[in-house]
Image (cartoon, rainbow, N blue to C red; front, side, top):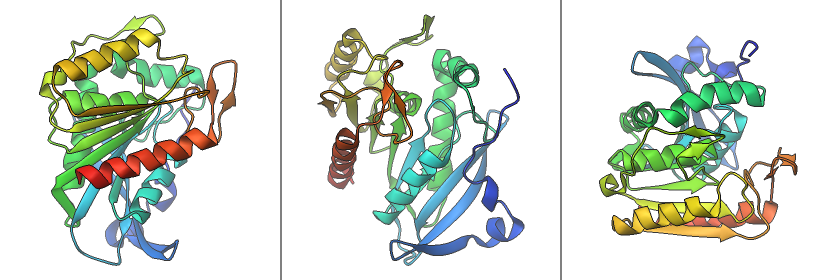
Length: 274
């Protein structure tokens, strides 16, 4: 594996002026505050990205965003800005540590697989992001949710399984099982620990989630009396929310209609539970 390149979307705004005072600019007619955030977990320095509408100092719900398998990049930060424009405090978390990102699939696998296997550490890292965002004066600490994409979808499910005190989570085309590429995770289902609601948004043609994994997680959630929902989109592959992807061989293909439907479902979900 070659040297990792930093795609972290906060890297260009980490000036002393920015970190000390923040920065405001106009997006869709609103004052948008952006902030590069450093926080600690297990001896690792994590580098997240915060966005919210600065026109009001009122407390509001927060949504933590868990990144896909190549790390925290512009895709997740754009989602944070979109959520901020909806009135939330949005915090794009760093699960790999140090803002590490991958340029190739091989690099991504080297970063992701240890956490895929060690779910305890994965849970600790995403819980640290929840605690970090709760410290902000504009956040209502009793109204925190999470969303995640691909590996991040798995991450927010693990956040719920950890017993984290969040209102709910949304998994966009997340990995749902305990196996990936021949690697088996060291986990046991812990749906009994889940306190919040869960919305799973899934593509019917997702090659990373065999039907058995769907049945297994549905049973796990239902047996534990979790408030869960699952939307399944026809003719839809893995990673269907990412406009940059068009890899039919690997089954990683953007689907505009399904992406829009999924975002609407997420909005309705959070409007209900918050």
